[in-house]
Length: 503
Image (cartoon, rainbow, N blue to C red; front, top):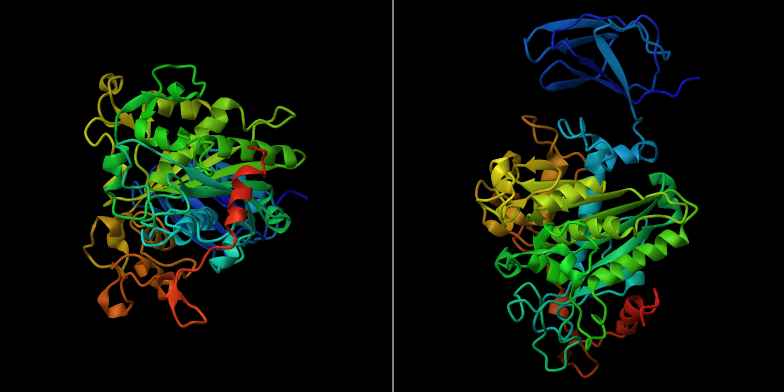
């Protein structure tokens, strides 16, 4: 018995409307048919065996008679071709969802599985913000508030199916100390130079079965304040191999600020004795070796500055061969970039694509961060000029527009346009270009105002409502309010230094 189709695509190569009849019954697992006739596509569900197909180019309609939905064979007018589409099951279609074919046919209208995956990894990126301690009055400013073994549970994260295996820390000394690095005002803070920048996690057995492979997720935290950080991170472009990454082309360049964060280390820091680059490469190598007998994937996600680090680390894994299993097979890599800036020049873009790293960039068209660096000289200038000092975005773009949401104010500020929770809201309501905004997973709209004031006032959701209870203070037995000591800090050190044998 043939494998049931989840969807069938019929493409008219002559760009004309056609009338065709399915004369043999086909699989009952068909949920919808998408017809593309030289223009926009239209998806319909069959009702009573009758389906009208509109040729968007000519505005004419054809009637398709579907006598029975019970078998697996078709008879189609020769000018049409039928392409099998994976069933509505992530375990059997994850490679397409993660960019094997560069998301062709999956973005407009958006594929429901892809939409769910983007929200899933976007929420993992949002978790890095929720877990971060950004308050200078805290003794632990710049660190993660939870130990790795309790990360998702402490955030009351819904059943995520991943276990955190490594925390990622970074240091950076460009411009003395850039504003995107947070530091405690306490004289004896937890670290003089380090900031927590994300984590590595791996899917557990139950989740791996649902995913169809063991997934290694790398999540990079972005910045917690307004996009002023971009001025600190923008320095100049440098050849990427200056920092020990073995790129064959000396003209492959990336933004120096991003490269500094990714590769810099501090020998005097217990957390940054090794760079973020060394931490992530060694942990990915360890996990690939541990799960060598399984099908694997590497998914890297990040928002804002975290997006730049996500692209850099995915490229680095491919360039150094960290993604190669012992049997010589390359582990597929995908980057879900949220509101990310440009990372490097056209040479870097070319090299990333040559290495097979798939990148899907999700952005709000009103956000300014994805327009820099290279606001003027970028991938849109004539090809002759791109050989000069021009930045270039990588791969595929999914552009969203907050003006399409009926829940948001008409105008906001730069922070609203750039916010991760806002992007997740826009993803949840996006169906396709020109289609009505409708929340697919019914995410709580109150999350939009977690760190912004962007929801319409009539919704009665207070702005910037998320804060620590009593701002982190606890009342002792003597009645005094103080900051508690973190008894789990040793677990943080263990995750950084001992798990992969870095000491």
